[in-house]
Image (tube, rainbow over all chains, first blue to last red; front, side, top):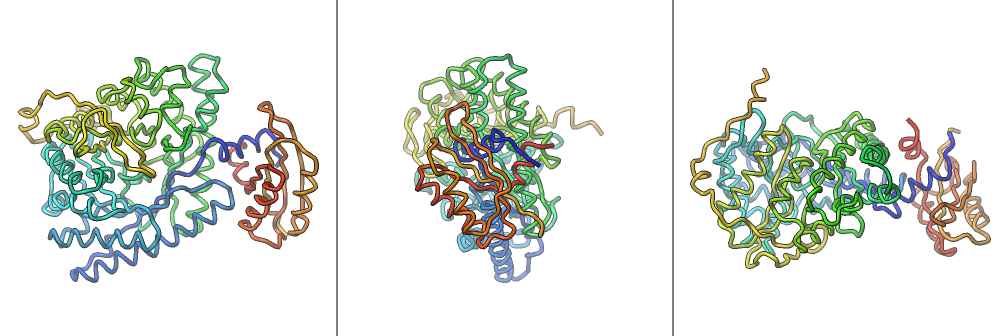
Length: 452
Length: 93
């Protein structure tokens, strides 16, 4: 089989010039069989399981990375929702001990994040789940590698407002206890959370999964941007087709790498998540892709349609390329990690209201937004409830990762450094839905839940 | 022995001795060159692609990667090495 110089050059320059990489190779690991009545044995089992899989994951990633010249940026572990395995150990100190165990195991295996410190509470809460939520501020502020999630709603259960109403206070406490409010960046609240999502902070190993599964998150906004820049002429169909072909190629590389890594690990290959995920690297921005479509700044009227087009093309190209598409497979528009999004917020082109509208067509939700540290709890709860209602009504996953920036006001910048970058503090609507949210209960599931 | 083929991509400004440097390095590592192509791309870069069989190579993929990177640096060129499977996956259905 021969390839033209152009084909080889295209692939090589995707990696060397356009930041194509495997953003996340996340190994989902079952912890249910680690449970023991003796908590010390239970902890030891969990520690050994994580270290064993973590080290193997790193080795396999290095081998495949070398073979194909494609960087695998983040190697992570996702575990069975921790509230589930702690059902017989409902004690606040034990939750903290389990978090420290997972954190230590991640550190010893050189894994940057362990996801799954969370609970499925779309309809109600067990004692264990409630305790997990109460422990989250300490867990997130006292550990560095634990990622936490909650699933508070689904198409069939509706939205558990009682769970949402706990979050404003929990997030405030987490922010206040952590340096630069950073603990909140490792917590995401979902509706319709996928059980095989490879991306942090929301990755966990669902109860419908086997003992282990490798899930791959590809990336490549830079590649898509580059190809759009070379195709400035042409109508929307042409633009869509151009993106589809490129995403097809990117996804094929993810499929190949995932399969090979799963083969080396001797476990099942899970899914490829085709989400476009930006990074702080120059040019690796989803906002940048939208802007080369011909939009002055993301957030301008017309941006929602542009994102809808991008999303549609990404899904169609990806679906052709892999028989294992899963996870979130949307387009991430985090405000912190994407230089174009930060610019748009700072120049006033993009506010929370427009961001919420954008998430209606792209998933994955309001990601890494910072609000003033003195924002009342019920306003944070309202922001979360609105975003998650979009997911419930539109049969899709949405999530919220929101950071009350302690001591900061709208317009200021919260600096995290590293992978998380920096995030401008956004203005919130000061008017209140306190009385409405205070009613509690559940938002009834939409009529589509009655399909049976 | 079954073939194990990699593509070596050399990118930069055209100059004398590129093929000679890369091919002599490969020869020293007992790597057979199967095919060579080169072109000036529309964006002005000189690109040379080599298909090489590493089945009998004396060095590992990692050593090959590092060795070629060094060779490239001496010529002010960027050299990447990738197993051919990725091109099959991306460019052929």
